[in-house]
Structure formats: structure tokens, C-alpha cells
View 1: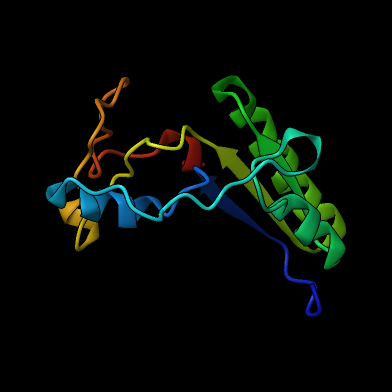
View 2: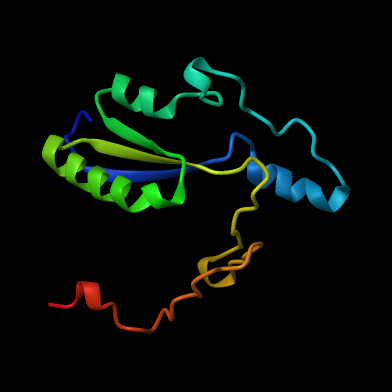
Length: 129
């Protein structure tokens, strides 16, 4: 905010320390990983969007998949318009597993990918002239 750098930050929020929980699964544990609580207005815990706004930035919370596209469009426009960082906080189920790996080419998906995985070598028509 101080340097007026516009960018969009995407946070996937499950109200858990999800990567810790996933690491504990091999040991049949699910211990001390929940970080959500019943916050004001039914929000599960920390209001990250409120924090962004309090610091002079902006943000939006997404709770349904069909809201994502509009939220991203809004965030890009808002960041450019106000020249500040903008958060898109995407709420997901607490025990959803996150794709993870030791490097980008070793990512493990724990859930099926509905629309397939794009070919990283394919051209991106949306970026072409």
C-alpha cells in the first residue's frame, strides 16, 4: 500500500493449518490444526479481507466456485484503479487436501482434476496478439 503497487493476492483459506494436517495423516493424527472459530457475522475466524481494508488495501471473500471469475475480474480492476494490493480470499472446506510437492514439476494432486490438466507446452491463446 505504501508504495502504491497494484497486485492481486489469492489466499485459499480452509480455517486449518492444512499442510500440517496433511503431514499428520500418515500418523493417524489430526491434532491442533484447526485455527478457525465462530467470528462476527458467521465468518470462521480471522477476517483477512477486513485486515487488508484496515491497512488501506482491499479484498473480497469468495465462498462458491461460480463467484471466482467475477472476484478475479473485480480484484484486477480494483488493484489497477486504486493502485493497491487486493486480496481474493477463497474459502474451501476445512479438510480439503491441497496440491503440494517439492517443486512445481512434482506437484501431487489429492483430488481429481475435473477439467484436466493443461499442457504446459501448449500456446496460451489469451496471451497471443
